[in-house]
Structures are given as C-alpha cells and as structure tokens.
Amino acid sequence: MMEIKELTDKNVWQLTEDEAFVLTEKIMKEVENKEERNALVKIISSAFEFRTVGKSKKAMIHSFTLLGFKFFAVEGEKTILRGLCKRKNANQSVL
Image (cartoon, rainbow, N blue to C red; front, side, top):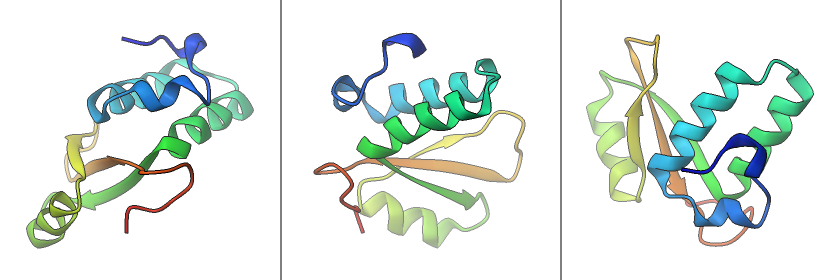
C-alpha cells in the first residue's frame, strides 16, 4: 500500500480503486493542512473519478457500477457510499 508522502502525479495511476479509496480516507483523517490535503486529493482525482451516492439510491448505484465504478462505505457516514472509477486518460471523465 502506498503511503501519503509517496503519492505523485505519475504513480497515482498504479493504484486500484480500493487503494485509492483507502488512501483518500487516510489523507482526509491524517493531513491537517487544508492546502496540502486538497493538493493530495487533487492528485488522486486526476486518475480517479469520484461519486457520492445515498445508500438508498440502488438504481443509481447500479448504473454507476455498470460504468465501472466501485462503491465503498464511508467511515462515520451511515447513509452514503463513495464510488471511484479509474479514468482512461488524465482529466477525462468516465461519463
């Protein structure tokens, strides 16, 4: 598993959706400086598209899953899921 301080624009593409989700959650918890946190999340967003969906929106979750999104439970949130999908190219939307 990649550590926060190892994350770069180039190696972010080596992450899986599972690893990107775990790393994003770790960044949100451990990085106190807002600018640094935003810069790190921006690096991950360059390779992954994020979607936040209510757990009750089964049809929407299914549609995003068909597009390649993988959904994860967000710690501390009982009603939402976060979906991630690796982009095909930098800054290109999956949708």
